Figure 1 (tube, rainbow, N blue to C red):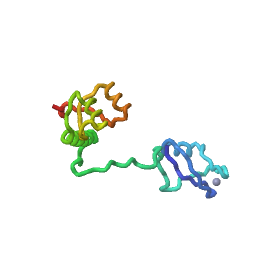
Figure 2 (cartoon, helix red, strand yellow):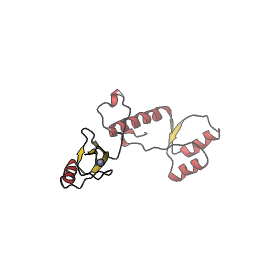
Figure 3 (cartoon, protein in one colour):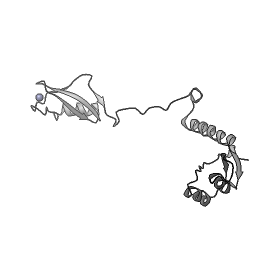
Figure 4 (cartoon, protein in one colour):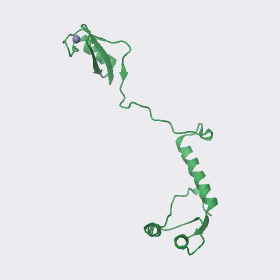
Length: 148
Ligand SMILES: [Zn+2]
């Protein structure tokens, strides 16, 4: 839709909504347009007041960029951030493998020294840990970052 500011022959200003500039011209030509105040059919566009209504007033903001993200597409950036996070996790945690649920409990209930661990758990084991209030996080490991 396009909004035009319109002016009648008697000087009344009003807005007119049209599908296009051609739509406005056609309506004017066929004298469909009339002033809502005085009914005058002598209508003209007020110059330079056309606005295009796209349904959104503001453009979406671009995400913050770091120099190394320059020129990369959003998918590549997401992968990069994820990879960084994964490196962090892999270098700062002890791999306890399938003993993860057992170790997580030992640490949580202070039967073992407190340290960050990683490992594997089944869906049910994960659910049990969460229900016990043990803080565990899970995330998928991309093939190229295999744990072992
Ligand atoms: Zn008028």
